[in-house]
Length: 70
Image 1 (tube, helix red, strand yellow):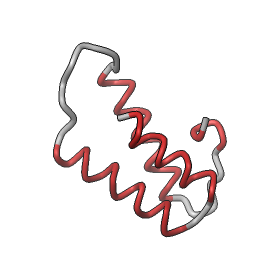
Image 2 (cartoon, helix red, strand yellow):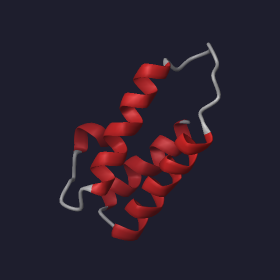
Image 3 (spheres, helix red, strand yellow):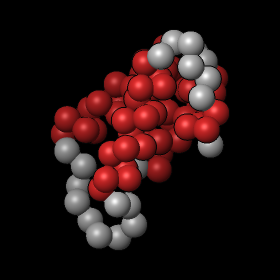
């Protein structure tokens, strides 16, 4: 999960359209496949919200949302 979010954040900050598209596609693949449920570190609601915000920022070609990227 950390790697997936970091990849999206890096793509968001870099502003490269191909990197943004690839990161967003990765998020969508993981979400479609289903996130494994574990009670060890990530709350499902918070994780879903973070992925939603990151995917939306990646989809917005004008976005350079540094709050999402930190």
